[in-house]
Length: 172
Image 1 (cartoon, rainbow, N blue to C red):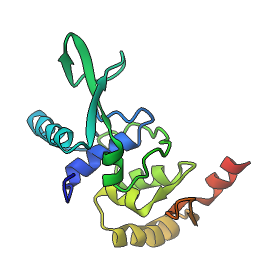
Image 2 (cartoon, rainbow, N blue to C red):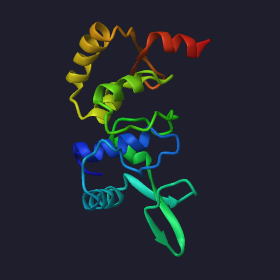
Image 3 (cartoon, rainbow, N blue to C red):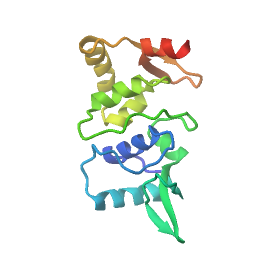
Image 4 (tube, one colour):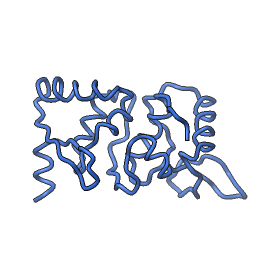
């Protein structure tokens, strides 16, 4: 596993982790990289064991053809661990990002999921440092957006944050 992922690879892995089917493709539209760069990056992720090939379904984006069968890519448990997400955690499908999706929008969507988000997941999705995520939560989220955030530790001891009203409605 690479010792450090760049922001682009981290964004690709975070995008896959946010999908219920864990598919890597298509890469987030917010990434402004060429097809050649995506191809090279995905090959590096494959070589590092962070993503793996799997048979493609009809609705999947095809990575390549192998022996006459379509193949796509999924994030592996190693890939999930590399971006700070516990393998086996059930992802909740978030809306597909469009070109206008901001980092703030990505974090708010993560905080609105029933399981919320950890600092590690938010840093993986945005490329921000942990202190920047914490600062955003106390500044922009609470003061400017008026979100009431709740912090709890899950069963594995990881601190997770979520929007209070959503969490209450999910528990009832």
